[in-house]
Amino acid sequence: MASGLDTTFQINRRSLIQAGSLGGLGLTLPSLLAAEETAPNDKSCIFIVMSGGLSHIDTLDPKPLAPRETRGPYDQIATALPGVQFTEMMPRLATIADRFSLVRSLSHRDTVHVTAAHTMLTGQPNGTTADDSPFIGSLISRFQPSTVNMPSYVWLHNMKTGTNKVPRYNNGLHKIGYEHAPLRIGHELDNPSTPDFRVEHFNPPEGVEGKRLQQRFELLRSLEGEQRPAKWTDLHERARDLVTGSHARTAFDLSQEPDSVRDRYGRNPLGQYLLMARRLIEAGVRLVTVTAWPGLAPGETEPTVTQVWDMHDSYFSGNDNMYGNGPYGMRWSAPRLDQALTALITDLDERGLLEDTFIPVIGEFGRSPKFEGEGRGRGHWPNAYTGLFAGGGVKRGFVYGASDNIGGEVASGRPVSHADIGATIFQTLGIPLEQRYGADGFSFRVSNGSPLNDLFA
Image 1 (cartoon, rainbow, N blue to C red):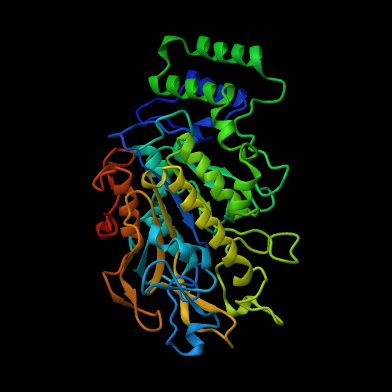
Image 2: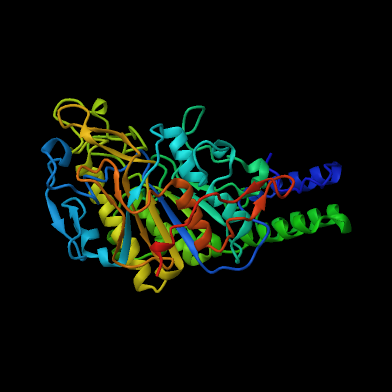
Protein backbone atom coordinates (compact mmCIF):
# COMPACT_ATOMS: atom_id res chain seq x y z
CA MET A 1 0.00 0.00 0.00
CA ALA A 2 1.27 3.48 -0.84
CA SER A 3 2.35 5.54 2.12
CA GLY A 4 3.28 9.18 2.46
CA LEU A 5 4.63 8.74 6.02
CA ASP A 6 7.97 10.29 6.96
CA THR A 7 10.69 7.77 7.70
CA THR A 8 10.67 8.89 11.34
CA PHE A 9 7.03 7.97 11.77
CA GLN A 10 6.64 4.60 13.45
CA ILE A 11 4.12 2.17 11.97
CA ASN A 12 1.71 1.01 14.65
CA ARG A 13 -1.88 -0.14 15.04
CA ARG A 14 -3.24 3.40 15.01
CA SER A 15 -1.40 4.39 11.82
CA LEU A 16 -2.58 1.20 10.11
CA ILE A 17 -6.16 2.08 11.03
CA GLN A 18 -5.62 5.55 9.61
CA ALA A 19 -4.19 4.28 6.35
CA GLY A 20 -6.84 1.64 5.92
CA SER A 21 -9.67 4.02 6.68
CA LEU A 22 -9.00 6.00 3.51
CA GLY A 23 -9.68 2.86 1.55
CA GLY A 24 -12.95 2.52 3.41
CA LEU A 25 -13.91 5.92 2.09
CA GLY A 26 -13.36 4.65 -1.42
CA LEU A 27 -10.09 6.57 -1.80
CA THR A 28 -6.51 5.87 -2.71
CA LEU A 29 -5.88 9.55 -2.29
CA PRO A 30 -2.40 9.41 -0.74
CA SER A 31 -1.30 8.66 -4.31
CA LEU A 32 -3.20 11.70 -5.60
CA LEU A 33 -2.13 14.42 -3.21
CA ALA A 34 1.17 16.16 -2.68
CA ALA A 35 2.37 17.39 0.67
CA GLU A 36 5.18 19.86 1.17
CA GLU A 37 5.64 23.29 -0.38
CA THR A 38 8.77 25.26 -1.17
CA ALA A 39 8.90 28.84 -2.42
CA PRO A 40 5.63 29.48 -4.29
CA ASN A 41 5.61 29.59 -8.09
CA ASP A 42 2.62 30.26 -10.34
CA LYS A 43 3.78 28.30 -13.38
CA SER A 44 2.50 24.89 -14.45
CA CYS A 45 3.63 22.40 -17.09
CA ILE A 46 2.03 20.26 -19.79
CA PHE A 47 4.68 17.69 -20.76
CA ILE A 48 3.78 16.08 -24.10
CA VAL A 49 5.61 12.79 -24.65
CA MET A 50 6.14 11.71 -28.27
CA SER A 51 6.46 8.07 -27.30
CA GLY A 52 8.55 6.11 -29.77
CA GLY A 53 10.45 9.08 -31.17
CA LEU A 54 8.98 11.61 -33.61
CA SER A 55 10.83 11.93 -36.93
CA HIS A 56 12.24 15.47 -36.89
CA ILE A 57 13.14 15.25 -40.58
CA ASP A 58 9.53 14.55 -41.60
CA THR A 59 7.99 17.26 -39.42
CA LEU A 60 9.84 20.19 -37.79
CA ASP A 61 13.35 19.99 -39.27
CA PRO A 62 13.04 19.11 -42.98
CA LYS A 63 16.06 18.71 -45.21
CA PRO A 64 14.91 19.75 -48.70
CA LEU A 65 18.41 19.65 -50.21
CA ALA A 66 19.24 16.18 -48.89
CA PRO A 67 18.99 13.05 -51.08
CA ARG A 68 15.56 11.52 -51.41
CA GLU A 69 16.55 8.61 -49.16
CA THR A 70 17.02 11.17 -46.37
CA ARG A 71 14.49 13.93 -46.96
CA GLY A 72 11.49 11.65 -47.53
CA PRO A 73 8.54 12.36 -49.83
CA TYR A 74 7.01 15.36 -48.05
CA ASP A 75 7.25 18.85 -49.46
CA GLN A 76 8.42 21.76 -47.34
CA ILE A 77 6.17 24.68 -46.43
CA ALA A 78 6.85 28.17 -45.12
CA THR A 79 6.04 29.07 -41.54
CA ALA A 80 5.22 32.30 -39.73
CA LEU A 81 8.98 32.63 -39.15
CA PRO A 82 10.91 33.87 -42.19
CA GLY A 83 13.44 31.30 -43.34
CA VAL A 84 12.03 28.50 -41.15
CA GLN A 85 10.28 25.59 -42.84
CA PHE A 86 8.25 22.60 -41.69
CA THR A 87 7.01 19.74 -43.83
CA GLU A 88 3.55 19.78 -45.32
CA MET A 89 2.37 17.53 -42.46
CA MET A 90 2.50 20.45 -40.00
CA PRO A 91 0.44 23.16 -41.76
CA ARG A 92 -1.37 24.45 -38.67
CA LEU A 93 1.72 24.61 -36.49
CA ALA A 94 3.44 26.43 -39.35
CA THR A 95 0.91 29.27 -39.07
CA ILE A 96 1.63 29.79 -35.34
CA ALA A 97 5.41 29.23 -35.41
CA ASP A 98 5.76 32.77 -34.08
CA ARG A 99 4.16 31.64 -30.77
CA PHE A 100 6.65 28.94 -29.75
CA SER A 101 10.33 27.95 -29.94
CA LEU A 102 12.16 25.03 -31.50
CA VAL A 103 15.31 23.37 -30.19
CA ARG A 104 16.97 21.57 -33.08
CA SER A 105 20.01 20.40 -31.12
CA LEU A 106 18.50 17.85 -28.75
CA SER A 107 21.13 15.15 -28.45
CA HIS A 108 22.31 12.13 -26.49
CA ARG A 109 23.68 8.69 -27.36
CA ASP A 110 21.11 6.21 -26.01
CA THR A 111 19.26 4.29 -28.75
CA VAL A 112 17.21 2.07 -26.40
CA HIS A 113 13.58 3.04 -25.71
CA VAL A 114 13.53 1.92 -22.07
CA THR A 115 16.63 3.75 -20.87
CA ALA A 116 16.23 6.78 -23.14
CA ALA A 117 12.63 7.22 -22.01
CA HIS A 118 13.67 7.02 -18.37
CA THR A 119 16.32 9.69 -18.74
CA MET A 120 13.70 11.84 -20.48
CA LEU A 121 11.08 11.29 -17.76
CA THR A 122 13.46 11.59 -14.80
CA GLY A 123 15.61 14.40 -16.19
CA GLN A 124 18.71 12.53 -15.04
CA PRO A 125 21.77 12.02 -17.26
CA ASN A 126 22.97 8.75 -18.73
CA GLY A 127 25.32 6.79 -16.49
CA THR A 128 23.58 7.82 -13.27
CA THR A 129 20.78 6.35 -11.19
CA ALA A 130 18.14 7.64 -13.62
CA ASP A 131 16.45 4.24 -13.57
CA ASP A 132 15.92 4.62 -9.84
CA SER A 133 15.08 8.33 -9.78
CA PRO A 134 11.61 9.87 -9.41
CA PHE A 135 10.02 11.23 -12.55
CA ILE A 136 10.15 14.99 -13.09
CA GLY A 137 6.45 15.24 -12.25
CA SER A 138 6.90 13.40 -8.96
CA LEU A 139 9.64 15.79 -7.86
CA ILE A 140 7.48 18.75 -8.84
CA SER A 141 4.67 17.24 -6.77
CA ARG A 142 7.10 16.97 -3.86
CA PHE A 143 8.66 20.43 -4.03
CA GLN A 144 6.12 22.60 -5.86
CA PRO A 145 2.68 21.02 -5.26
CA SER A 146 -0.66 22.39 -6.29
CA THR A 147 -1.80 25.33 -4.18
CA VAL A 148 -5.44 24.28 -4.44
CA ASN A 149 -7.08 21.00 -3.55
CA MET A 150 -6.22 19.20 -6.78
CA PRO A 151 -3.75 16.42 -7.56
CA SER A 152 -0.36 17.95 -8.28
CA TYR A 153 0.70 15.43 -10.94
CA VAL A 154 -1.61 13.84 -13.53
CA TRP A 155 -0.69 11.50 -16.39
CA LEU A 156 -3.14 11.30 -19.29
CA HIS A 157 -3.14 7.96 -21.09
CA ASN A 158 -1.35 5.02 -19.56
CA MET A 159 1.48 3.50 -21.53
CA LYS A 160 2.32 -0.19 -21.48
CA THR A 161 4.34 -1.18 -18.43
CA GLY A 162 6.31 -4.21 -17.32
CA THR A 163 9.85 -5.48 -16.98
CA ASN A 164 10.98 -4.20 -20.36
CA LYS A 165 8.39 -1.49 -20.89
CA VAL A 166 8.20 2.19 -20.05
CA PRO A 167 7.35 3.98 -17.94
CA ARG A 168 7.41 2.59 -14.41
CA TYR A 169 5.16 5.15 -12.81
CA ASN A 170 6.37 4.47 -9.25
CA ASN A 171 10.00 5.01 -10.26
CA GLY A 172 12.08 6.25 -7.33
CA LEU A 173 9.11 7.06 -5.11
CA HIS A 174 10.68 5.28 -2.14
CA LYS A 175 12.98 8.32 -2.01
CA ILE A 176 10.25 10.97 -1.70
CA GLY A 177 6.97 9.21 -0.83
CA TYR A 178 4.44 7.25 -2.84
CA GLU A 179 1.89 10.06 -2.60
CA HIS A 180 3.88 11.75 -5.39
CA ALA A 181 2.99 9.14 -8.00
CA PRO A 182 0.91 10.50 -10.89
CA LEU A 183 -2.84 10.18 -10.96
CA ARG A 184 -3.20 8.12 -14.16
CA ILE A 185 -6.21 8.62 -16.40
CA GLY A 186 -7.14 6.68 -19.53
CA HIS A 187 -5.93 3.51 -21.21
CA GLU A 188 -6.34 2.29 -24.78
CA LEU A 189 -10.07 2.52 -25.64
CA ASP A 190 -10.95 3.95 -22.22
CA ASN A 191 -10.18 7.53 -23.17
CA PRO A 192 -12.06 10.86 -23.36
CA SER A 193 -12.73 10.59 -27.10
CA THR A 194 -15.39 7.95 -26.32
CA PRO A 195 -18.91 9.18 -25.39
CA ASP A 196 -19.17 7.09 -22.20
CA PHE A 197 -15.77 8.02 -20.74
CA ARG A 198 -15.92 9.04 -17.08
CA VAL A 199 -13.23 9.83 -14.48
CA GLU A 200 -14.39 8.08 -11.33
CA HIS A 201 -11.35 8.52 -9.09
CA PHE A 202 -13.13 11.11 -6.93
CA ASN A 203 -16.38 9.22 -6.47
CA PRO A 204 -17.16 7.73 -3.03
CA PRO A 205 -17.97 4.01 -3.00
CA GLU A 206 -21.42 3.09 -4.18
CA GLY A 207 -23.97 3.63 -1.43
CA VAL A 208 -21.60 5.76 0.68
CA GLU A 209 -22.66 9.34 0.06
CA GLY A 210 -23.89 12.38 1.91
CA LYS A 211 -24.53 11.82 5.60
CA ARG A 212 -23.02 8.33 5.62
CA LEU A 213 -19.80 9.61 4.10
CA GLN A 214 -19.59 12.35 6.72
CA GLN A 215 -20.12 9.76 9.46
CA ARG A 216 -17.10 7.82 8.18
CA PHE A 217 -14.93 10.89 8.32
CA GLU A 218 -16.11 11.57 11.87
CA LEU A 219 -15.33 7.96 12.83
CA LEU A 220 -11.87 8.36 11.36
CA ARG A 221 -11.33 11.53 13.38
CA SER A 222 -12.43 9.85 16.60
CA LEU A 223 -10.07 6.92 16.02
CA GLU A 224 -7.18 9.28 15.43
CA GLY A 225 -7.86 11.44 18.45
CA GLU A 226 -5.28 14.05 19.32
CA GLN A 227 -2.30 11.89 18.39
CA ARG A 228 -2.72 11.96 14.63
CA PRO A 229 0.25 13.51 12.77
CA ALA A 230 -0.36 16.88 11.13
CA LYS A 231 0.50 15.38 7.74
CA TRP A 232 -2.32 12.84 8.04
CA THR A 233 -4.74 15.52 9.22
CA ASP A 234 -4.04 17.58 6.13
CA LEU A 235 -4.27 14.54 3.87
CA HIS A 236 -7.62 13.44 5.24
CA GLU A 237 -9.11 16.91 5.03
CA ARG A 238 -8.05 17.28 1.44
CA ALA A 239 -9.37 13.80 0.65
CA ARG A 240 -12.75 14.72 2.09
CA ASP A 241 -12.88 17.93 0.06
CA LEU A 242 -12.00 16.08 -3.15
CA VAL A 243 -14.75 13.52 -2.64
CA THR A 244 -17.49 15.81 -1.34
CA GLY A 245 -16.71 18.80 -3.57
CA SER A 246 -17.16 19.22 -7.31
CA HIS A 247 -13.99 21.11 -8.27
CA ALA A 248 -11.81 18.12 -9.21
CA ARG A 249 -14.65 16.14 -10.76
CA THR A 250 -15.64 19.09 -12.95
CA ALA A 251 -12.06 19.69 -14.12
CA PHE A 252 -11.92 16.24 -15.71
CA ASP A 253 -15.39 16.53 -17.28
CA LEU A 254 -15.07 17.44 -20.96
CA SER A 255 -18.85 17.62 -21.34
CA GLN A 256 -18.46 21.07 -19.78
CA GLU A 257 -16.78 22.22 -23.00
CA PRO A 258 -18.74 23.43 -26.07
CA ASP A 259 -18.75 21.04 -29.02
CA SER A 260 -16.92 23.67 -31.05
CA VAL A 261 -13.98 23.61 -28.63
CA ARG A 262 -13.83 19.83 -28.57
CA ASP A 263 -13.91 19.81 -32.36
CA ARG A 264 -11.14 22.39 -32.45
CA TYR A 265 -8.80 20.04 -30.57
CA GLY A 266 -9.89 16.98 -32.57
CA ARG A 267 -12.26 14.18 -31.57
CA ASN A 268 -9.48 11.68 -30.97
CA PRO A 269 -7.60 10.69 -27.79
CA LEU A 270 -4.69 13.10 -28.31
CA GLY A 271 -6.94 16.06 -29.01
CA GLN A 272 -9.23 15.37 -26.07
CA TYR A 273 -6.34 14.69 -23.70
CA LEU A 274 -4.77 18.04 -24.55
CA LEU A 275 -8.11 19.74 -23.95
CA MET A 276 -8.35 17.95 -20.61
CA ALA A 277 -4.79 19.06 -19.82
CA ARG A 278 -5.80 22.67 -20.38
CA ARG A 279 -8.76 22.25 -18.03
CA LEU A 280 -6.57 20.62 -15.37
CA ILE A 281 -4.02 23.42 -15.52
CA GLU A 282 -6.85 25.93 -15.16
CA ALA A 283 -8.10 24.00 -12.12
CA GLY A 284 -4.69 24.08 -10.41
CA VAL A 285 -2.86 20.87 -11.36
CA ARG A 286 0.87 21.58 -11.40
CA LEU A 287 2.11 19.14 -14.06
CA VAL A 288 0.19 17.10 -16.63
CA THR A 289 2.03 14.52 -18.72
CA VAL A 290 0.25 13.56 -21.95
CA THR A 291 1.11 10.47 -23.97
CA ALA A 292 0.73 11.61 -27.59
CA TRP A 293 -1.39 8.68 -28.79
CA PRO A 294 -3.68 9.80 -31.64
CA GLY A 295 -6.07 6.86 -31.30
CA LEU A 296 -7.11 4.04 -33.60
CA ALA A 297 -5.79 4.08 -37.14
CA PRO A 298 -8.17 3.34 -40.02
CA GLY A 299 -9.15 -0.32 -39.90
CA GLU A 300 -8.15 -0.84 -36.27
CA THR A 301 -10.66 -2.02 -33.68
CA GLU A 302 -8.13 -2.32 -30.87
CA PRO A 303 -4.86 -0.41 -30.38
CA THR A 304 -1.88 -2.00 -32.07
CA VAL A 305 0.58 0.24 -30.27
CA THR A 306 0.81 3.29 -28.00
CA GLN A 307 4.30 4.19 -29.21
CA VAL A 308 2.97 5.23 -32.62
CA TRP A 309 6.00 7.41 -33.44
CA ASP A 310 8.35 4.39 -33.43
CA MET A 311 8.25 4.13 -37.22
CA HIS A 312 10.54 1.22 -38.12
CA ASP A 313 10.68 -0.46 -41.50
CA SER A 314 9.89 -3.80 -39.84
CA TYR A 315 6.47 -2.55 -38.69
CA PHE A 316 5.08 -2.10 -42.20
CA SER A 317 3.69 -4.59 -44.69
CA GLY A 318 2.12 -4.55 -48.12
CA ASN A 319 1.49 -1.04 -49.37
CA ASP A 320 1.54 0.44 -45.89
CA ASN A 321 4.63 2.45 -44.90
CA MET A 322 5.79 5.28 -42.70
CA TYR A 323 3.83 7.70 -44.86
CA GLY A 324 0.63 5.67 -44.90
CA ASN A 325 -2.52 5.45 -42.77
CA GLY A 326 -1.65 2.40 -40.67
CA PRO A 327 -0.95 2.27 -36.91
CA TYR A 328 2.58 3.59 -37.50
CA GLY A 329 1.66 5.76 -40.47
CA MET A 330 2.35 9.48 -40.45
CA ARG A 331 -0.58 10.29 -42.72
CA TRP A 332 -2.81 9.22 -39.85
CA SER A 333 -0.85 10.42 -36.80
CA ALA A 334 0.80 13.70 -37.85
CA PRO A 335 -2.39 15.64 -38.74
CA ARG A 336 -3.87 14.80 -35.34
CA LEU A 337 -0.75 16.06 -33.58
CA ASP A 338 -0.72 19.18 -35.76
CA GLN A 339 -4.36 19.97 -34.98
CA ALA A 340 -4.30 19.21 -31.25
CA LEU A 341 -1.04 20.98 -30.45
CA THR A 342 -2.04 24.06 -32.44
CA ALA A 343 -5.36 24.16 -30.60
CA LEU A 344 -3.68 23.86 -27.19
CA ILE A 345 -1.16 26.65 -27.78
CA THR A 346 -3.67 29.06 -29.30
CA ASP A 347 -6.35 28.26 -26.71
CA LEU A 348 -3.98 28.88 -23.79
CA ASP A 349 -2.75 32.06 -25.47
CA GLU A 350 -6.27 33.38 -26.00
CA ARG A 351 -7.13 32.65 -22.37
CA GLY A 352 -4.04 34.44 -21.08
CA LEU A 353 -2.61 31.21 -19.68
CA LEU A 354 0.27 30.51 -22.05
CA GLU A 355 2.90 32.59 -20.26
CA ASP A 356 2.29 30.63 -17.07
CA THR A 357 2.11 27.18 -18.73
CA PHE A 358 5.37 25.61 -19.90
CA ILE A 359 4.86 23.09 -22.74
CA PRO A 360 7.77 20.81 -23.71
CA VAL A 361 7.01 18.47 -26.64
CA ILE A 362 9.74 15.85 -27.02
CA GLY A 363 10.38 12.18 -27.68
CA GLU A 364 13.02 9.94 -26.20
CA PHE A 365 14.93 10.40 -29.48
CA GLY A 366 14.38 11.23 -33.15
CA ARG A 367 14.54 9.05 -36.26
CA SER A 368 17.48 8.17 -38.46
CA PRO A 369 18.44 10.26 -41.51
CA LYS A 370 18.44 7.19 -43.74
CA PHE A 371 15.61 4.72 -44.16
CA GLU A 372 15.94 1.18 -42.91
CA GLY A 373 14.54 -0.34 -46.06
CA GLU A 374 13.12 1.00 -49.33
CA GLY A 375 11.97 4.25 -47.78
CA ARG A 376 9.44 2.62 -45.47
CA GLY A 377 10.73 3.46 -42.00
CA ARG A 378 13.46 5.09 -39.93
CA GLY A 379 15.48 3.81 -36.98
CA HIS A 380 16.19 5.24 -33.53
CA TRP A 381 18.32 8.38 -33.70
CA PRO A 382 19.36 10.30 -30.56
CA ASN A 383 22.37 12.13 -32.07
CA ALA A 384 20.33 15.14 -33.19
CA TYR A 385 16.60 15.79 -33.13
CA THR A 386 14.03 18.51 -32.46
CA GLY A 387 11.81 19.53 -29.57
CA LEU A 388 9.05 22.12 -29.50
CA PHE A 389 8.70 24.41 -26.47
CA ALA A 390 5.94 26.91 -25.77
CA GLY A 391 4.73 29.11 -22.92
CA GLY A 392 6.15 29.53 -19.45
CA GLY A 393 8.23 32.53 -20.51
CA VAL A 394 9.73 30.84 -23.59
CA LYS A 395 10.65 33.18 -26.44
CA ARG A 396 8.15 33.32 -29.26
CA GLY A 397 9.34 32.60 -32.78
CA PHE A 398 12.80 31.40 -31.73
CA VAL A 399 14.94 28.57 -33.08
CA TYR A 400 17.85 27.33 -30.99
CA GLY A 401 20.58 25.24 -32.57
CA ALA A 402 20.58 23.31 -35.82
CA SER A 403 21.25 19.85 -37.16
CA ASP A 404 23.50 19.21 -40.14
CA ASN A 405 22.32 18.95 -43.76
CA ILE A 406 20.90 15.45 -43.27
CA GLY A 407 19.60 15.88 -39.71
CA GLY A 408 22.20 13.49 -38.36
CA GLU A 409 24.38 15.51 -35.99
CA VAL A 410 24.25 18.80 -34.10
CA ALA A 411 25.74 21.53 -36.32
CA SER A 412 25.21 24.58 -34.12
CA GLY A 413 24.11 25.39 -30.60
CA ARG A 414 25.13 23.26 -27.67
CA PRO A 415 23.81 19.68 -27.59
CA VAL A 416 20.80 19.68 -25.25
CA SER A 417 20.40 16.49 -23.20
CA HIS A 418 17.47 15.01 -21.31
CA ALA A 419 19.12 16.22 -18.11
CA ASP A 420 19.18 19.74 -19.54
CA ILE A 421 15.48 19.54 -20.41
CA GLY A 422 14.72 18.33 -16.89
CA ALA A 423 16.75 21.19 -15.43
CA THR A 424 14.84 23.63 -17.64
CA ILE A 425 11.49 22.31 -16.40
CA PHE A 426 12.55 22.43 -12.75
CA GLN A 427 13.93 25.94 -13.05
CA THR A 428 10.83 27.20 -14.87
CA LEU A 429 8.60 25.88 -12.10
CA GLY A 430 10.75 27.44 -9.40
CA ILE A 431 12.55 24.38 -8.02
CA PRO A 432 16.26 24.99 -7.28
CA LEU A 433 18.42 22.50 -9.14
CA GLU A 434 20.51 21.98 -6.02
CA GLN A 435 17.42 21.01 -3.96
CA ARG A 436 18.20 17.80 -2.08
CA TYR A 437 15.92 14.86 -1.41
CA GLY A 438 15.97 11.22 -0.32
CA ALA A 439 14.86 9.14 2.64
CA ASP A 440 17.46 11.03 4.64
CA GLY A 441 16.50 14.33 3.05
CA PHE A 442 19.82 15.06 1.32
CA SER A 443 21.35 12.13 -0.59
CA PHE A 444 20.09 13.16 -4.03
CA ARG A 445 20.04 16.35 -6.05
CA VAL A 446 16.98 17.38 -8.08
CA SER A 447 18.98 17.98 -11.26
CA ASN A 448 22.49 17.69 -12.60
CA GLY A 449 21.58 19.25 -15.93
CA SER A 450 22.13 22.74 -17.31
CA PRO A 451 18.92 24.67 -18.06
CA LEU A 452 18.61 26.10 -21.55
CA ASN A 453 18.39 29.74 -20.51
CA ASP A 454 18.73 30.93 -24.12
CA LEU A 455 15.19 29.64 -24.64
CA PHE A 456 13.67 32.32 -22.43
CA ALA A 457 13.07 36.01 -22.99
